[in-house]
Image (tube, rainbow, N blue to C red; front, top):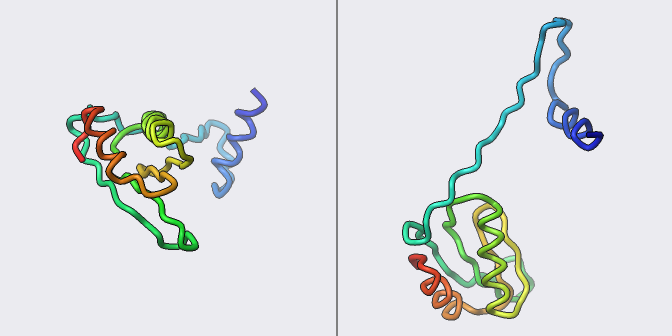
Length: 113
């Protein structure tokens, strides 16, 4: 309960104070997008070297769905490739050049690549 109270004041940080006793602050409840089925997802797989000190990574863009499903897919790709990576903002980053292997894995899972 204490954790929720800490989050409440942070979300209202830039709100002007109200003297109205009946005022109820309404939080913007952002609804997450529903995850599209794999056959309707259009994923783009590419290699990126920008801002990575010459190291190359494989990017998977275009995922439409919840953060949990994105992280689940990233975990699957990372374990199949045996490398590290991350997932955020609809993008999966896999360390190293695994473009063909990732395409094969995604096609086997039913995604359009």
